[in-house]
Length: 337
Image 1 (cartoon, rainbow, N blue to C red):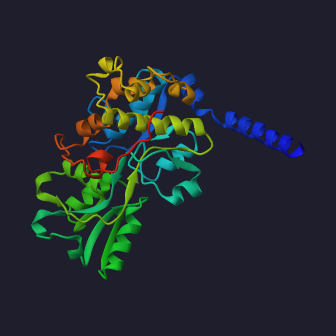
Image 2: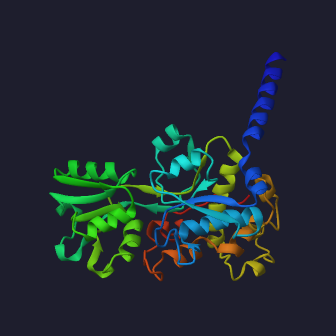
């Protein structure tokens, strides 16, 4: 009996603690807008235009979360952050979620009090060089000056790659991506290294984009995704299932164009996803139709990817690992059930 009472008391305390920590959703609702941390300007992922309107893959994720909460993708305040500022801003509560090219690592979760909610983009570190160098592999970069951004995982991976392959390295560490591009174009380094997706984006802002090539070598795993603070499981689930909703929508063929018609579908998986059947959204603290709101506002995962960074966009990045698991990639979402 005592054991049962102790277990019951523990369960009550756990529930109380969970309720006490689940404050982010309420804070966002009371404020009336989502504060979302993004990069200071990375074409295809998060960048403002001349009028200050933000667009990009990471930006659309922020809008998807806002649509899930408010049924309005415009209720987002974008907070531009450098690589060195991003995690501190989240820790201090200056933003509610970080949706900025950030790599999931054990150190960042274990020591910073943060949690990565999902992998929205599978990436890896690569190298950009002038096409005039006539190099076809990163293994030919022995003795090169390589520009890298401070405060990123790219610093350590570059040092590891050169050391493991017995190559000499002259590392040029710079504060932000603008400095990175400037130093590279001025010839202060022979190569530029960062995530492959970022290399495609940075090449676009160069004076002669066609004069630079991304080498085929990928020297690291860079699982990128949105980040939240530890201690609020409800908020973690909302951000996580925003991504999963977009993936499931793509797999089930639900798009911005047909989501209205899809609400009439008799397919059980579609009905559960869109909230026609079940109370999954309500269990998250949202509405039944939160996934339908997301797709209506920004589209499914494929639409967001292709519009911002895919082969038909300015970046022209192949889907690769970010293709659905059923089509040869590794993007895979748990089911709505």
